[in-house]
Image (cartoon, rainbow, N blue to C red; front, side):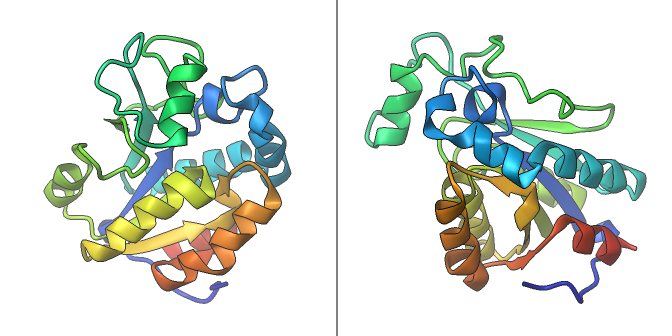
Length: 204
């Protein structure tokens, strides 16, 4: 894990991905997966709140990436268990409590919102257009779930030529084993794996 590096705030953007009630809060659509417990173990909401506040103060764009479907999830192809789960739980429906961000992670003035219907924040979204328009090539990725959406976004970003930074305590998933497998193996090859304190220090 890296804790000795620097970041140029003028080149960075922060992604807060899928930290929505249905994904990782008690009584959410996916609560039975264990994701609320792991989010608490990681202290993920408080850690991301703290990082987002620093990013805003440093002029780093904060981008909320939300998984959003319409009622009945029209157009969501059910080609994988994860997508079947969205429909089966009636989760992440626009305007619902479940689709809303976790308390404390609501967008602030100047933040940007990106909506998606796949795991990766890049797939079928305006994320890359925003990053290019803002002149940002270094992407700090936080969110849920570490081994799914976060990893997908980091892998694709690396392939696209972006520098990807993943603070592991700004991410959570269903359990520590799945989280650690992604953090300790897959993400090591496509991103700078670090923690929230180190990112804050690197931003100066």
